[in-house]
Length: 396
Ligand code: PLP
Image (cartoon, rainbow, N blue to C red; front, side):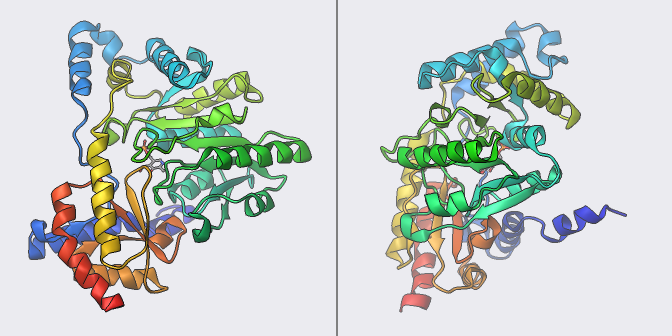
């Protein structure tokens, strides 16, 4: 018998996964090369060479006790020191080792931060469409997710009025994700400034801190000359949840960090509590071999130009077939407007052409679908005729 709270999780088990399973079933039927599966955000690129070299170097040069043993719940001092230095060098911040906690990917980082701030019925504001796991994470700590609806007219960017109206005296945190999953949008500086201004005003009004959690697994995946603003430079209560899952193509290795600046309200206590949460949530510490590996290749990146080409090619194919889509600035997703109001119907029509897409309602963005382009460029090109046929169904 499972807990009552699990029932909705079991019945609503991820639509992304469900579409991926459908893609696999279809591949068995019609052959993998004839299926155009854009469902999963699982990077297709190999990790950069530096990662393999770093892992070998760790194994050959470090004491096995250090490589494989327990350590401080916050992670290796050397790793945290190097990450702090790297951030300071790139963004002019002033993190020290103590401000960095190594975690088991952004998923774990977000859980640690939310558990640190949420009391029962506290609220966390998110901007739709959003990575739906946020709601599950908030629910883990008996909090409530408050969703700011999207405005397609302004390119799915947060807007002052609607955002401000969602903040109450129970708001403890706001989560932003830029470059964004699922829209591929990068919030410009004025949006980050607007969010910071609203939060500063609201903090004064309600008399307690509101932490701005910047979920940044796609920070380095940028395809235009758009700059990704460094959020903590604009708001003192900014917390970063970073992951190497996408920048180094290491999602299965479960490695990332959270950064809590000294400027954050109650920073010392916060850092201590967050470190304890690494332990009590059951991770204990981030994978040790991976900590030592990433500290050796903090400036390495996957082949970003490959994703850029995918972004451009898929956008061209999809819009060329008549559909409207947001031109991806970053991350690896194309956000396409469904030509019919029920996007699940559109997803179904896509499946008939062997195109696997994820309905936007899985991201609180009904009326749209998400296509992941962390796939082979060959598959994108092979999908062209299928998209053209799909387009003809709607646009003649
Ligand atoms: N946040 C967003 C927006 C994501 O898209 C993902 C994964 O796809 C995560 C967090 C979780 O990443 P990680 O693998 O680092 O836990």
